[in-house]
Image (cartoon, rainbow, N blue to C red; front, side):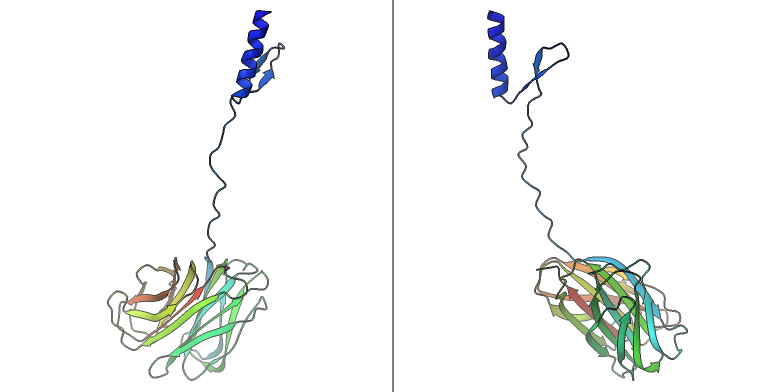
Length: 267
């Protein structure tokens, strides 16, 4: 009888400390392992950012061949809701007529600059993709001209209704060859965690020109344009809103058409 009382008292004590008895195969009872208490709260949600997905490029081939279009094809399908950011460089004396793609998107032209003698121009534009699928972007010009190149970035996670958060562009006929000499000029963003898209084209097509990314930026597109103007893109994440400039470094001093756009996450 005394043994039974002691067993009941022990069982009650174990239960109070977080143990619960279970029945073994022979009918006896034994305590469970203590209940683990997790002091950690729910994981904090990661802040939203805009992310690079893929790029596409296209150019006139041969470079000096006149034509009224230039197109870039993405290797993988574009996702619905993603932003397509564009940089287009083309011969002076014409302008962009339309920008279309195989997804039926409507593109907004953001900015256009030209070099000092109007021999080459550059334009930035973007669209938010209404649907997903094969993405081929085609830029059509008002006149048939040479020297056409387009770079496109697909971006995920941008604000669905108002993704653009700033832009700037700068032409420099003789920027120099020191690090970060080539600049887009400054823009001021209003949102944190923006994606900064930037591109530059050596409008004077200096022989042997190579272009590297600016400080704190990552080179994305560095395709060799056969006999054509070296044209590259870069990007970065801007952690905190405010004034920001994208830069490049040219190995040869030559005219530069440099532009940037900022895309914000949902607010």
